[in-house]
Length: 257
Image 1 (cartoon, helix red, strand yellow):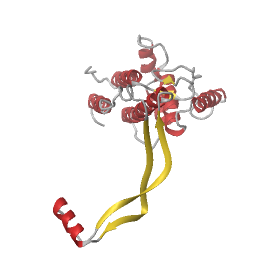
Image 2 (cartoon, rainbow, N blue to C red):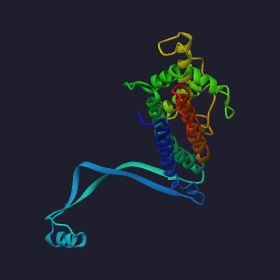
Image 3 (cartoon, helix red, strand yellow):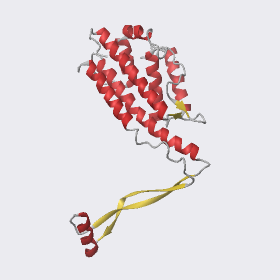
Image 4 (cartoon, helix red, strand yellow):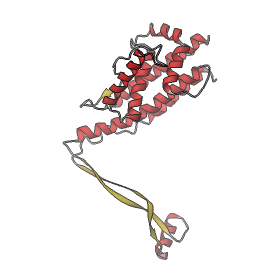
C-alpha cells in the first residue's frame, strides 16, 4: 500500500477540490428576483432539423470553418413543464436548489473517505461501505477506543458516527433526502443491533443525532447550506485523521501530522 500519510493527503486534496467546486455557487442569486419563468424542453433523440440549401450550408461552413453538404441542429421537444419562481415561493425554491447542490457534493466526500478507510485495511476485497466501516472498526478497535477517550470536538463513538453519516448518505443517494426514509433506516439499523444480525454483533444503537446536516423548514428533507457543508467537510477530515492515527498506532508508523 502507499505510505499512509500520502493516502491521507490524497483524501485532503480531493476534499479541497470538492470544496473549490462550490465557489461558483451564487448564494445571492434570487435576492432581487421578482418573477422568473423557465420552460423545459429536451432534445428529441429520434429527429433532427436539417438545412440542405447550398447557399446556407456554404455560409455556415465558412462561418464555423467546417465542411459538409448538410447542417443539422438538434430538435427540441417541449415537455410542458414550467418553473415559475415568484416572491411567494422563492424563499422555498432557491434555498432548496442550492441545498441539492451541496447534498450531491457531500456524496463524493463520503466515497473518498470510505476508500481511505479501505486502504488502511490489511486486505482489499470487494466490500460495501457498511462492511468497510465494520472491518475498520474490528481491525482498529483498541486504537479507536483510546482515541475516542481523548476527543474533545465531539463526544460520540467514532464507529457510530460513521454509521450515522452512512445513513444520511444513503438517504441522499437512494431516498431523495427524505427525512421519513432516514428515520426508517435508523429504526432498521437499531433493530438489526437488537437481533445481532450479521455485521451488527459488535455495534451499539444509533442515536438520532444530526452531525452538520440540517433539515428543511418543513422538516421533510435533509438540508445543507454553505456553512453546514463546510462543517461536514471538516468533520470528514477529522475522521480521516483519526483513521490515520489508528493505522499509525497499530503499525508503529510515525505520524507526520
